[in-house]
Length: 177
Image (cartoon, rainbow, N blue to C red; front, side):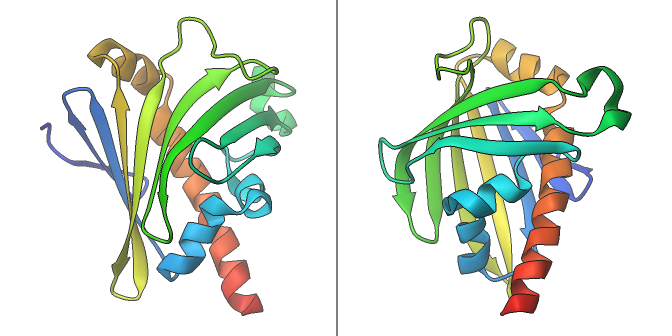
């Protein structure tokens, strides 16, 4: 396993063809889990800052599909403004509020896997941690090359950006009660 590195509050390590990211969220496990398992909540924070997510399909159950589009709505992001990025997940295992396992892929608007892009098996584990929640996200790639391809695209920085958006949602939800 490579040395752990901390990037924008994410502890990251590489283990063969696995990327492991850990982050602590200031909220109870049930609330953090619902941010991933509720379509409206997920769409409100998923994607990097300046991007808006629309869930085209969201069936949170084993073999259920999550098909979504992220659109850049921030004019300050230059050439990215107006771009769309489609993704698709297929849920494999769900244990409320402990674990979500799904395949993740870049896709087209119809939900077909994008050519030349890796498919990833993601296991998210939600752990109670001193009144907060530790998320452990293990992404397993079919090859080391696929892992490096996604690393070069900035996957860790993208996760960090969207996790700051999740922080904001958790603050709002806890104020509401």
